[in-house]
Amino acid sequence: MAKTTFAIGGVHPDDSKLARACAIEVLPLPSVVYVSMAQHLGAPAKPVVSVGDKVLTGQVIAEPGGFISAFVHSPASGTVKAIAPFKDLAGREVPHIIIDVEGDEWVEGVDLSDTLITELPDREVILDRVKACGVVGLGGATFPTHVKLNPAPGSKADCLILNGAECEPYLTSDYRIMLERTKEILVGAALMQKALGGCRTVIGIEENKPEAIAAMRSALASLPYSGIEILPLKKKYPQGGEKQIIQAVMHREVGSGALPISVGAVVQNVGTSLAVYEAVQKNKPLITNILTVTGNCLPVEKQHNYLFRIGMPLSYIAEYAGGIPKGAAKIVSGGPMMGRAISNMEAATVKGTSSILYLSEESTRRKLESNCIRCGRCAEACPMGLEPFLLRRLWKAGDMEALEANAVQDCIECGCCLYSCPACIPLLDHIRQAKGAVLGAIRARAAAAKAAAEANQKNS
Image (cartoon, rainbow, N blue to C red; front, side, top):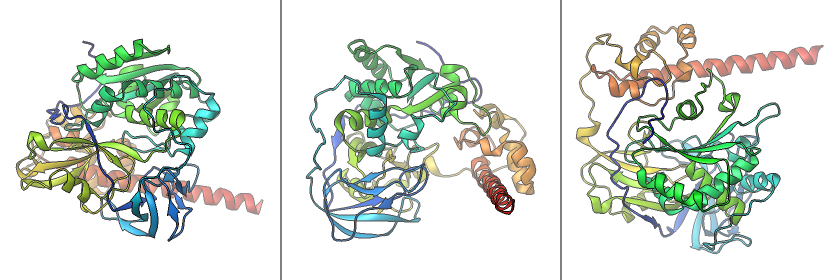
């Protein structure tokens, strides 16, 4: 099998795909849903409903708050109970629309049948439906998909890359949809390919998923599309990182601070492709996704892949799955490498929720930190070509200029440095703090420059 991969760095953690054999199950609706207005990259959505309003499943309840934003739809039918701040996964107060669930009556015009529709509409129809249905990237960043599929004038997509790597340990939701919704993903790929002008399209899948590779190839052979290929990728973390998969597939490097389109690339997740299919061919808004309930302290029979609706409390899902296991010392949203600890189990699912991951004390206990031995393993492991040991030292010294000069802002927070450090130094923690400070300074400079330019224009 091919060994296509990115050029530098990376590590090889145990993939721990404990739920890979678990077919997708549909979660029943809870009695109340809590729909966040900030479940996409960019400006929060603005509510267009009021307390007391009756809503239907799939109805627009919030509109985009800016150019980089997305529509939000009701995940159930019922009555708007409140529009108020509610704590998210990290414990931050975020505006939510809270709905008392009274049923599952869908708004008119949504096709809920299983009939596969392979004929592709015009480009403008594709873009309009993707936007209207609130589709965002489901690979982690939740960037509004209609914006990504419509590059700015002067930019051209040479290659659409569908990311099916799912390189994070434990997560299996992408794997399951590649097996269970194979043709829909491929039609979604053809729709995005058409929206981008008919560019080459590559679906990259890590080699530890041979069943998914075979299923996608078989389904592709039965569909009337050209210019789409399935590419096996080497099992290496973070193979699914945006810049890493571009390098693996196109052998092009995205520069510091640049976007993928600068090298002719557009990257979408396979889950996003499924959402595009449902939006364009079925007029179905993005109110569902797949999450994995898994972990090293869960028995096999309690591993699950669930189809969930946005707004479902994590506590409800955990209880439905059998409750929080006694051995769970840490609960994570996402994978163990890039995921974030959940501080609030009453928080609700959002469009990009990918897992409830239970980890044991033994696997989460930090080992005693010792002095850096200058072995350079963190630099060898960094897929961005950074020097984590140096960035840590600069951060501790408070040298912001040197941090920026050494591209701390390019860190993708993959955790390879921490994983590879024999001295058990919390490199990622320090670099994440440094990156936040530098990006804050860069934004402040940009805002000041914009204000100065506007003042000069006003005075001239």
